Image 1 (cartoon, rainbow, N blue to C red):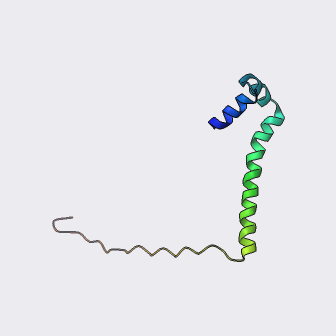
Image 2: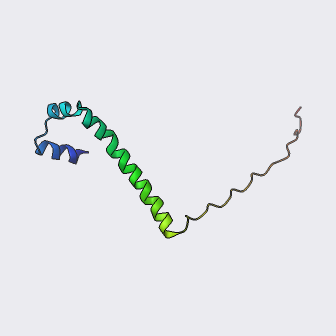
Image 3: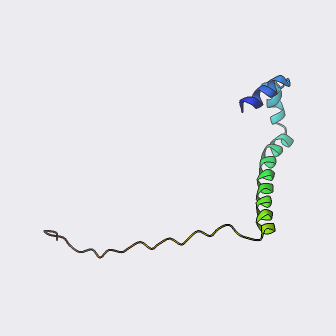
Length: 78
């Protein structure tokens, strides 16, 4: 994040300019849609990778059932 701030300052972007740009509807839509689009594309790449490989990832073994202990009153209880 610091590198992005340094690059923005070197490019001449002042906080006032950035604030006026962020108030534009197109900038707000882009700030929401660009990460969402990248996330969907990453998901599609993973699905395509599994589909082209033809195998699913290793299956997780089923959990062992917990043992049920028969409980009864102890000495001097109840």
